[in-house]
Amino acid sequence: MSTSVSPSDSATSNIERLTDPIAKPQVTTIRASRGWVALRLRDLWDYRELLYFLVWRDLKVRYKQTILGAAWAVLQPLMTMLVFSAFFGRLAKVPSDGVPYPVFAYCALVPWQLFSNSLTEAANSLVNQQHLLKKVYFPRLIMPISPLGAALMDFGVAFATLLALMAYYRIAPGLYLLVLPAFLLLALTTALGAGLWLAALNVEYRDIRYTVPFMVQFWMFATPIAYPSSLVPENLRVLYGLNPMAGVVEGFRWALLGTRSADLGMICVSAVVSAVLLVSGLAYFRRLEKSFADLV
Image (cartoon, helix red, strand yellow):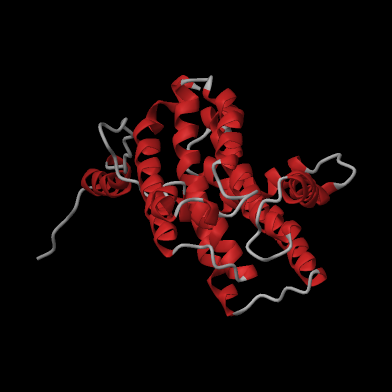
């Protein structure tokens, strides 16, 4: 016995099969976050190509239509080293832990330039790129992170000059050179942590951008660049490590020049402070991220 199917029933069945996927579309709802939110660092990996292009753009903009180009990465610390050598090394007779003062000062200025450039650019990243901030979604953390990539390129050029200067004074680095990447990471961590705080605050309080140069200048003289940390009383060196860049600078000198003024306790305190600065900066940045587009 055969069962007959009417044309109308067959048509209805086909229509249901064709329209079923459309009847239940996937809907993504975007809502403003409330309270403290997750960091979602995995998004940075998903948007890694955008991070690469922002770094490349920063490099091109920095040296576009310049005569000396990347040579500015060397001239800035080199000219500062010459001034420090003349006034602190010759006139003030500041000790240099047994190494020639020009190498002593330049070895500290190389990581300092990396830190100061990264911090300044990261602090102004959201305000300077507000047109991009309002147009399309992407992890906002990319904006203060991208200046670190461009600063690393400048660091590479200045570091090569430092090695040449060490060769001129016949100073050969020892096995401690293998620890140098740890201090480089400490400098980047400090710059990013402070940069995240300042970038978020700069969106809400525009006078922050005017205080950043003064803060960087004050921070420089609070860091043992023109002088060794051995001038600080021994019982205060651990407290001196509350400045994370103190541990970075003394770590660079210890790893490259073999100086003995680096205090392990001071470096450990600097590392802890840098980690706290980064974690708190990430949390605060993510906390205010939802209001960036409205306030910028």
